[in-house]
Length: 399
Image (cartoon, rainbow, N blue to C red):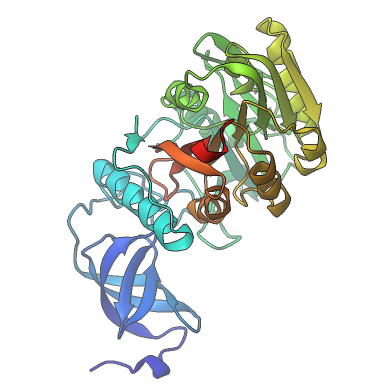
């Protein structure tokens, strides 16, 4: 019989079957109709789970035992997967991961925003391991030196690692060698590291024996300098395809690149538009954007440092193109309203969070039509899937 729903508490153990993967990577099952989100599960699993969080209309749970494994479940390749919070889908075969995440994005946009993506949606995937260019590690004192690792899921506790197979080989080697390189005494609690094309590693804060300062990556015709403090897309094998799809073949007089970072999209946009206006709030990233413009001899891009919302007054009504690549929270209400009011001819939205994208598109589609969309699996072994949506001003609004 089991417990009645009203009797379920944190710590209660339940049996259920996982129906599907949802955006973010959890599996969804039901207990007497009540949704239960189970981390590190696989659709088709029959599980015994322990409730970790009880809400009015759903539960969260962790696996106690796998009574029957779903199709596509595998032994995780990383020896630390059971405890480490860096990945959450290594229990699922690589090709199936992509299919399940794509389906979860479709459902999230449909359910939260009433948005139907085109039926011929492109899905781009590349190397499932050895791909990641950037990482942030934890550092703790240990006997004879320092322990290096990542947090446990939803915890401040650290898991010391002896391998991290999602990192590029040179970045993994640098991470695993950090404990021996760090000086005795007080060190930072966390370190950011990034890898360049030539195997050079940069760290922030500075680490003796590792590079400090910039690294560079060639993407298409442009070389991009950045350092470990900057945001830079993380999948070495998909950067070129991402840039090509975002920039596309449109041309015109003026384009705006909002949340421009180090100029990943600004530089190729400059070949297609007479003038590009890039806005970036992070001063370090904006400095590298200027460096990248100078070194690549791009002269028709203007970089503005500041919040995107503070620069909305400069966004003209007759702009040909706007590219937005916001953080996980998505666009602010003020920016959504400005984009609807001023209606550039074309807009490209690069999103790392389907729920925020669904909310934003729900408002934007009053002024724009979705012309195409694509998914990019930039973080294999995790529940994240990048979504790029190309929008055009509605035909009734075109002059």
